[in-house]
Length: 136
Image 1: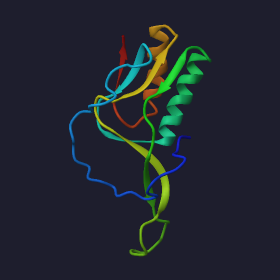
Image 2: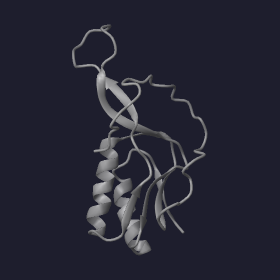
Image 3: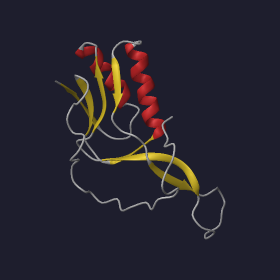
Image 4: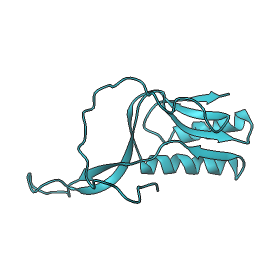
């Protein structure tokens, strides 16, 4: 799974879950001819990204090239079960990437459009945000 090698701060503040508009960066296909674009905001964790990558790779059977345009760099903490209130912030449990509408999540090239569409559909089923297929 994807996780940062080194972080400046081990635990981050959560941030407010308010709608901050559409994505301004990473909204165009840059590497491949087909891609998967997010249509809503949310947090994608490293497990979802890895599951989507595996689904795509298995479907294309070592054909073509896949680019992952997102990286989970935001730590999410959890306190243990049955731990009373207080006692500080919990330990880092997993990493997520905050996604806004318009962000390109994955790109593919070197395969036909219909194969890419099906592979990206399988990947989209693993993600917790609504997505759309794009092609040049």
